[in-house]
Amino acid sequence: MHTPDVDGAVREDGVDRSTVDAVVAAGRALYPGLRAAAVESVRVGERPIPDDGLPVLGRVAALPNFHFAVSHSGATLCLHAGDLVAAEALGEDRGDALAPYRFERFATVR
Image (cartoon, rainbow, N blue to C red; front, top):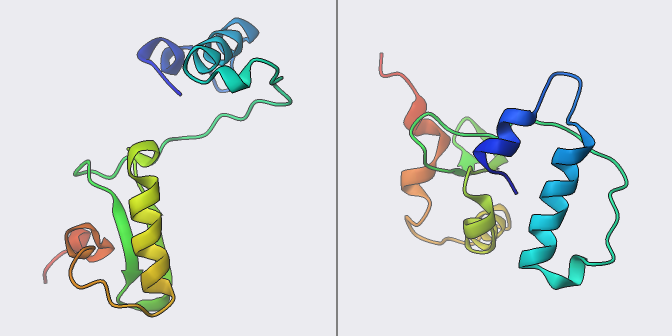
């Protein structure tokens, strides 16, 4: 979960406890099952946001055993994207469903 306020509270050395508490409270408001959850640790990472805003999904042509599943909107797309990428990794043909999201769209034409 994030908001501009939470994103702005992130520092190189981590996040202060009040920000962590705010995120947990927001999560509990959305998901009551989290009422008894406790924060064990906090890690700060950089969210992957491809330059064009679209996910990067599926196999990489030059590395046939390497598959991407990177998305800024992962929470809303994860089930469908995961199914498509997993099916492709297992050798199933899902047509052109992943074509607009492949890594190769970033390749420079020479």
